[in-house]
Structures are given as C-alpha cells and as structure tokens.
Amino acid sequence: MSTSTPPTETVAIGTLMEPKSSFLQRTVRAQAFQIFLVLIAIVLVFSLLAPDTFAQWSNFRLIIQNASILAVLGVGMTYVIITAGIDLSIGSVLVFSGVVSAMAMRAVGGDGWGTATIGIVVAVASGLMWGIFNGLLIAKAKIPPLIVTLGTLGMALGFAQILTGGVDVREVPSVLTTTIGYGNIFGTVPMISVIALFFIVVGAIMLHFTRFGLYTFAVGSSEIAARRVGVNVDRHLIKVYAMSGGLAGVAGILSLSQFSTTAIAGQTQTNLNVIAAVVIGGTSLFGGVGTIVGTVVGLFIPAVLQNGFVITGVQPFWQQVAVGAVLIIAVYIDQARRSAAMRGNSQGLWRKFVSGGRRG
Image (cartoon, rainbow, N blue to C red; front, side, top):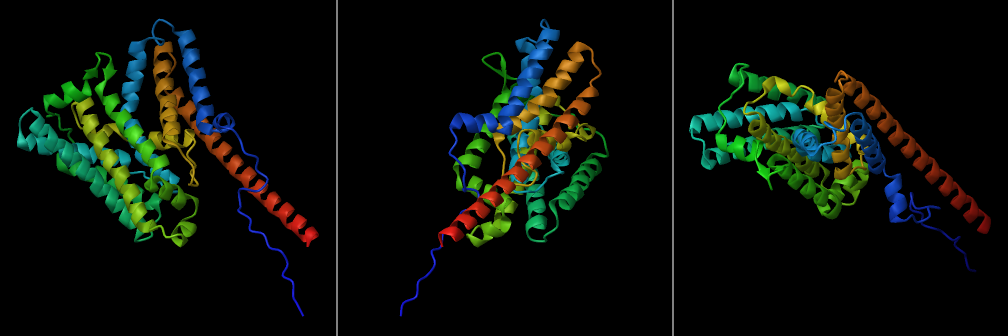
C-alpha cells in the first residue's frame, strides 16, 4: 500500500507574478529620481525669474556650500531611518561637539594644524560618545528611539550651555577657517563641500555594497527575521547610532570652520531639516528602504527654495510651507506604494494557492 504526498511549493513573498523590470524602469519609478525632477523644475523656475542672479555659478556654489553640513548629517540619518529608527539629537550633538572642540583648542592654544587636529579628534569623539549612548539605550534598554533621542537632544544642548554659560566660543584656529571653512579647490569648489562629498560617497558605498549596509536594510525590513538569520541586531543598532553621532561630530567641526563660532542657538531646526530631507529623498519612515543619493537630492530642495525666495523677493518663510507640503506628499507616496505592494503580494499568494489547489 503506497501513500502519495500532495505536491508542495515554496513561495517567496514579494516575488510572485512580478515581471522583471529594466534598470531604466526601476530608475523612473524610484522616488529619488522623481524628487530630482522636482528639484530640476524648481531650479528652472528660479532661473527664469532671476537669470542674472540665481542662474550663476557663484550662487549655485553658495547653495552647495550651505547644504554641505546638512549632507554629512543626512548620511548618518539615512542609516538610522532605514533601520526604522529616528535621531532627533543630531543638531544638539553638533552643538555639543563644537563647544567641546572649541574649548579644547582654546585650552591648547595656537592656530596651527596641531591644535586643529586635537579639536577635530575631540569633536568626532564627542559625537561618537552621544551616538553610542543613544544606541545602548535603544538596543539594550529597549527604549523607543524617539524618546531616547528626544532626551539626548535636551541633554547635549543643556551640557553645551552649561559649559559655556550660554555664550558662544569664538576662538577658532585660523587654519580651520581659511582651509576648510573658506578654502577652495581649483579656486571655485568649496573645500567644505569636497569633505561632505567624501562622506556621501563612502556612505553610499557602505550602504549598497557592504555587509554593514545589507544588515542595515535587514534590520529595518524585519528585526525579527534579521535575528533569525544570525544578525546581531543590538550590536548593529549601536553601530548605526554611533555612526550618526560621529558624523554629527564631524558636522560640528565643519560648522566651527565655516562660522568661526559655536552657534549654540543656531541649530534648533537642524534635526527636523535633515529628517525631512531624508524622507523627501525616498527613505521610508517604516524602515528597509532608502538611498544616500535620494537624501542628497532631498537636501537641495529646501536649500534651493530658501535661496530662490530670497533672490526673488518672496518671504523666506514660504520655504517652510513648501518643504512641509513636499514632506507630507513624500510620506503619502511611500505609504501608498507599501499598501500597493502588500495587496499585490496577497493577490499573488491567493492565485498561487488557488491554482495549486486545482492541480491537486
């Protein structure tokens, strides 16, 4: 007597009934590409309205320079949001790192690279300290990222004000301001933007071509699944938040170099601006999706709007309205795509189930 086993099929969710698409089709559908088209449209409008002022390399150079510090912060924030987390503390960590760095350089004295190197190391170490602190509380104490980083936002800024008495430190080595803050390569490209580009390129390579990036996407897609396949999720989250903090420290020394002061009260909207840029650029607040290129494109939309409004005589406050509207639209599009993908997967599974039942 023999028994027959009904045929079974292994189905991978997300691969059912999905025709392979070309690189061009994937690019056109990408939110980062669509936002890039919006950016081009904005640039064209302002160029037509003010061709003699807006559409000049000197003005574009200013826009690029102003977006450079936010771009460094955006790299770390992209990793954090891909893991389905958030980091509200980066603006305060930037301020704290700049304050501690400036005080250390003032204590050492001198205007040379020796003093500046000490300041750079102190700034990055300070940022790493706050990032590791955030990561430990999120990964080990299991406190939600929103609460942890909201708390460290206040703590870092409070410590910076305690250390300085609320008065900005203005003693910055001249080598930083002349070489990094106002230095140029080939006479036209800002040095601060070249440094930002370095972190952008490295961050993009790490995200898309290394195991660290793969783990980042895995944790954001499904933390439970990542643990089941052997990813040390807690350790990875600590590394991601440490990266975000360390890059905030880098941004702190860049800010010191550009403004020759700590600017304690000048970073209140930095965290929100960076988060908005990351989300506008296509990184999903639900985790598992994102690109560094999209973040950079998202950063330039508020930068171009602010610059264009000033040049054309429009109140710059309209920038906040425009960016807020684009942010809401970007999140809506992300939710709509996720809902459509889930419906497509459900329908594909049902069709597969029904056809398999008929064959049996």
